[in-house]
Every structure is written in structure tokens, then in C-alpha cells.
Amino acid sequence: MENSVLIRTENLVKVYPMGEQSIVALDDVNLSFQKGEFAGLVGPSGSGKTTLLNILGSLDSPTRGSAWVLGEKVETLSHKRAAELRNRHIGFIFQTFNLLPVYSVYENVEFPLLLLGLSPPARKKAVMDALEWVHLAERAKSRPNQLSGGQSQRVAIARAVVKKPEIVLADEPTANLDAENSHHILRTMEDINRELRTTFVFSTHDDKVIQHLRRKISLLDGKVAKDEIMKPAEETLS
Amino acid sequence: MIIPKLAFRNLVGAGMKTWLNAAVLSMAYVAIIWTQGLYIGFDADVSRVMIETEYGGGQYWMEKYDPFDPFTLQDAHLPLAGPMQNLIIRGKATPILIVQGTLYPGGRILPVLLKGIDPEQKLLGIASSVLKATDHEIPALIGSRMAQTSGLKKGDFVTVRWRDANGTFDAKDLVIVEVMTTIDQGIDVGQVWLPLQTLQEMAKMTSQATIVVLDKNFGAAQAVSGWTFKGLDYLLKDIKDIIQGKTIGSSILYTILLFLAMLAIFNTQVLSIFKRRKEIGTMMALGFSRGKVIELFTFEGALQGVLAALVGAVYGIPLLAYTAIHGYGLPGNQGDNFGFAVSEKLYPTYSAGLVLGTTALVFIITTFVSFLPTRKIARLRPTDALRGKLR
Image 1 (tube, one colour):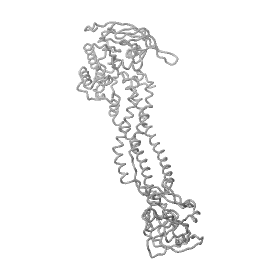
Image 2 (cartoon, helix red, strand yellow; image 1 turned 90 degrees about the vertical axis):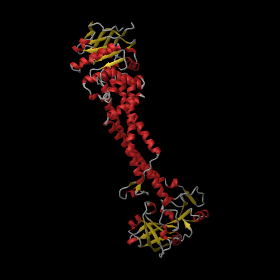
Image 3 (cartoon, one colour; image 1 turned 120 degrees about the vertical axis):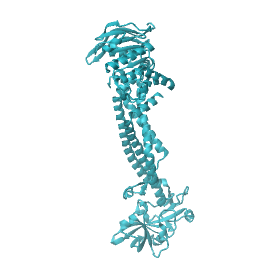
Image 4 (cartoon, helix red, strand yellow; image 1 turned 180 degrees about the vertical axis):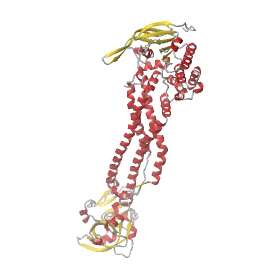
């Protein structure tokens, strides 16, 4: 595997047993993602976008085939090692934000850093930097229920990038946002992608998101139907 | 240190729910300590009263004496042996002669124990000094329960019949010089106290006694021929057994109380895991392993136990201190229902062992009960958790 390839899948198959039948969510998926990509998995509901993201995020394992993330073979990882991989190298952004409700904005963003064992001053700097990126430093003390949808997703982005991970996986990040907030969110993620060279992989069927993608991978019935470069990278990221 | 920190944040963040749980659990803490303290205080109080009014530091029993067999009383008397005389002269012991008799108050027949006691004795908390020189030939002291049963009151004359050492029955009138109030039924019910010498003369048992009570601070008693020494362990055994029985009863009660509190914790924890499954999924996505999530939830439960102890301390310490200082009054005449000396007010005793032991016990059980539902997490897949599913 080349140094710049962070993620690679080989003949990836995921089958969900449903009683006596089974549903093939991913069917022989072969993909690779390089450092600094801003790529999207596009397709209708049930096309396997979220399943693929879950496997790439080591939250799930394939039924057959293999997925390598940062050189680690996902299907062979122990629960503990997979958790470590997620903690150190992968950021997640969810459709429903998934902020921890009893924590403040600051504490939500700080959460991944606590597991990394950073010193309090280092944590504080990283959290405030991340909140600056998403323009929410002034809301550090707010609770998630005091934020709008757009603000919540920006906090989720800050949480995903605070540890400066190599990869950010975003599952329908704009699905619950209006057009203006979606635009802001995507601009924020593009900025981070540019500034930190973070690889972003989205799942989406939102046209607003698709317009921002530099690579569009269309999934249909669990298969890669099309893999196309939408626009060249704005910087050399490898 | 991340787990304690997050657990603390979660508890603080949960707000009212945390405080309600802590309040319920704290009641278990306080109630357990209070009831156990009450029984410890009860035990100490009963022992103290019985020692002060009846048992002293132990008793020599004339070897034929059996308090549970009134027929033994006819022969249960013996002249006081030399060593006993010495103790009595030094004020370290006091003899009591016990003779079976019959009172005839208001035409009724009332079997009683006539007990002769030295009016000068100060060893037992009995108002025997009222039996000192009076104008009456046979002055008698009775307790309030005896007065109620017999219908006698201070100043009343009543005929008493007894059998002397020769087997001859005799009868005379005695006068009630005082009705004493005592919490010890053992020196009251069915008993009439007379001056020792008077009873010895009536029963023709000069210088004889049935039992000799030792001073409560008396050390080891030596063997005396014809007499059997009964220490406090023996004398208080029945009472201790009864209290032990009541303590077991209260233990069952507090076990139920603890069980209910634990059920609340368990239920809360199960609900919490169900309600927070998406949060669990998020934590896993952010890098928490299942073990860490289990650790976090268990620690939250344990912290809940600590918080409950602190909440309990806030209202429990003043409450328990108040009852320890001012006592807990038994309603009505409940004390008599126990069958032994119980003060009108019980003073609970809270030892460090009781408080720390109870706190540790509740804490350990709370932690364990908090851990049980978290086993579900061990079977939870992050993707299911994120979707809000719980298997």
C-alpha cells in the first residue's frame, strides 16, 4: 500500500442476516482513499453508504473481503484496538450530531482528547483552536440543547477534528440542516481539509454536499456504480 | 483519571435525576444506621438498667435456687459464708432473701415473691432506703406495676401469708410505705420488697440469703461452697438473645429497605443504559472501548453511592445526633411490652464501625448493582448503539 493511501478496501462484502434471508449491503467494493481527499459516497437510501463508512471507521467489520485503514486490517482488529484506532486517527460526524447532552460545548470537544491523555493546557489549546475553526469559541460554555442545528453540527465537526485525525468520516452531515447552515458546514470542512490535510469521506445524497465534493463515488445496491473526480484538489496534499 | 472525571460530569449534568437517586439511596443509609444504632443503644441501655437495678456485677445463687422454679424457694436459702460477709461489710455485695408468699389485697389472693433487702444498701438502684426504721412492723416497697396489679397504694395495709423455714404458715399485715417507679419489671412484677432482717425473722432464716448481688465494678468472683456464681454473661444472656432476635428482625427490615434502594438504582441504571444507548455508541465512535463504557457506567453508580452518603450526611448527621442526645421516646407504655427493662427513651449509639461499615456496605452493593446492567453494553455493537438499538 502506497504511503499516501490511507484507506483501501478489497472485495468488500457486507451481508446482514434477516431471518432466513439476508441483505447484501456491500457487494465487492474496491476503493482507496488518499491523504487529503474530500470524497463523497453518493447514493439512495439502502445503497450501502453508511455501512461502508461504519466499516472504514472500524465500527463494523466486513462479512468478506478486507478493509485497511492506516495500515490496520479492520476485520482483524480487537474491540480495544479498533477503539484506539478510532480515538487516535478517525473523527466522526453524524447526521444527528450526537453531542453528549450533559456536557458543555467545550467538554464535548474535549472528550476525544481526554482519552488521548493530553495535559490540561494542551487540551485547552486544542479545544479552543477547534472551536475557533468552527467559529464557536464564544459558545464554549453552552449546552447542546442551547444550540441551533447548524451550531450543533459545527461543534460535532470541532469534536471530530480536535485531535487532528488523518481521517474524518461524515455520515449525512447536512441532512438535518437548512441550505445556509449546510453551506457553512461544508465550507468549514473544506477549510479544515485544506488547512490540516485531513481526509474527508462523506456519505450523502444531498446535492448541496455533492457540489462541494472533489471525488464522487456512486453506490447502488451495495456496488460502486461510478467513481469520478469532480474537481482537482486545490492543493497538493500527498 | 478520565473515568472518574467523566462519571462526575455525567452525574452533575444529569441534574435532578442524580439528586433524586441520591436522596432515595441516602434514606437507606440513614435508616440502616439509625435502626442499627437504636438496637445497639437499646442493648446498652437494657444491660445498664438491669446491671444497676438487678444484676450488679454478677450474683451468687444459693445452689438450689432456680428462678424459674418457685418450688425451689422453700430450700433456697443459706447462711452467708465468711467471704460473703466480708464483701457485704465492705459494701461490695448485698444479700437478698427470697421467700414465696401470698398477698390478700381486697379479698383477692395474689401469689408474690417476698424479697428481703438491706435498707442501707446502695449497690442496686432500688429505693430500699424507704424500708429503714418506720413505725410499722412490716414496711413494704412495691413497684408501680405491682401496685396496679394488686390495687395497692402507698399507706395501704394488706395481709401477707408466708411459710417459714420450719414449714409453718404465718400471716401478718404489712404496710406499703412506697410505690416505686422503675423500668425494670424484674424488680417489680409480682414482688414485695421488705427489710432483709424483718423477712429473715418472719421466715426464721436468720442471717440467710437466697442470692448475693455483687458490686457492678467487682472483679473476678471466687468460688464459695454452697453457692454458684452467675456472671453477667449468664444473667444477661436471655435479654441479649431477645435483643439479638429483634436485631435480626430489624436486619430483615433493613435488608428489604436496602433491596428496594438497590432496585431503584438497578432500574435507573437499566433505564439509563437504554436511554443513553446512542450516547454509548457515540462514545465508542470517539474511541471508548466497551470496557471503558462499562467502567464509566459502573463508576457513575458508585459515585451515586458516594453522593448519597454525602447527602445522607447533610441531614443524617444532625438527625442521628439529635436522637443520640435527646433519645427516641417510645410511645405510650411500649417499654413494658418488651418483657424486660426498657427506658422510656432509647438513646441510639452510633459507632464508627457501624457508620463506616454501613457506608462501605451500601457503597459496595450500589457499585455491584450498577455494574450488573452494564453487562448489556458488553454485547452492544457500536453501530447498533449509534442507531439507538439495544440487544
